[in-house]
Length: 160
Image (cartoon, one colour):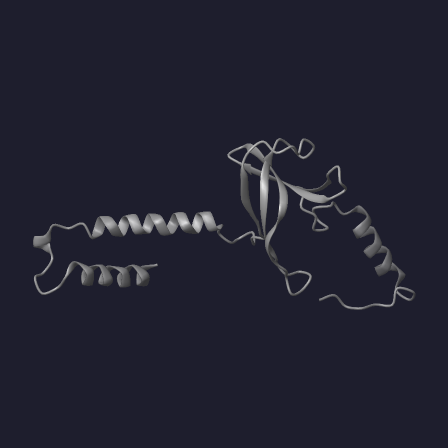
């Protein structure tokens, strides 16, 4: 939270404030360079998203909003889900593929992406599957394979 000040009496702080905004980059001011607003022939606004994956650039032309979660405050994080078409670039927005869905969200720098978390979960499940594929003679007769699986799941949760 910033502290209020009297810009008439404290001109140095005011000048520093104006210069900071005047010379800040758009990214520093909070603009996302991978999203551009465009206008079609009927003057309808839409967005074009650039997604860079494995050094390949993919562009998506938004059709309409499917879901929107607005942040409760200015520095908060909102999530938008759009119906989109693939397009060639920011400037060539003609669709060339089927409709798809794009989720736009703000991810903290230190946070793992959904893809990373899901990959980790599936890898752990594969490890667990290998652990539970013992021959039947190794499993004691009074316990079932499902109770062993429950025990392994409990152990796995405690390890991670």
